[in-house]
Image (cartoon, rainbow, N blue to C red; front, side):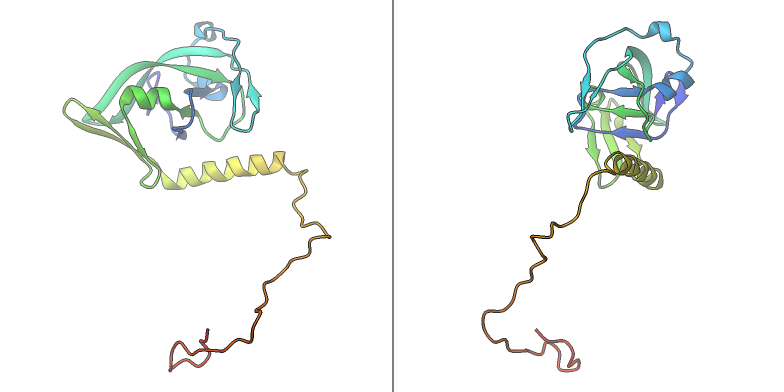
Length: 178
């Protein structure tokens, strides 16, 4: 995916997100002037209720797909100064503009074009690395949460109420019984 004529990797396609997000580190590398950012006062609220105040919004050219099925358009991103393993998050607005169908199973996003179907393929290794980094960050933030079983609730195991009978499943293997 190209944003403002720069190849941008590590882009999360999140069909639950109501905004397209460009992280500040990535924005700085795109060589776009900060004066082009339009200020905004509405905070972003995540699924867990955490609020993040965006620096503003900016419209930049976006290029999606692989030759010969490439589409170009201008779209608005919210610029956020928050650390993230991702460079950008593509949410519903771009998915809707592309009329895209996202498959997490195939790590692919397909969208119709005038002369075919455009496809953006994900990289499983990079996807896994970003996911692990994101989990480690959440684990670090939630490090003070105690996840131990309380003493008053010892681990209980089910016990049979009647006498059991062992049934052979394979005649060749006497150790396999029910």
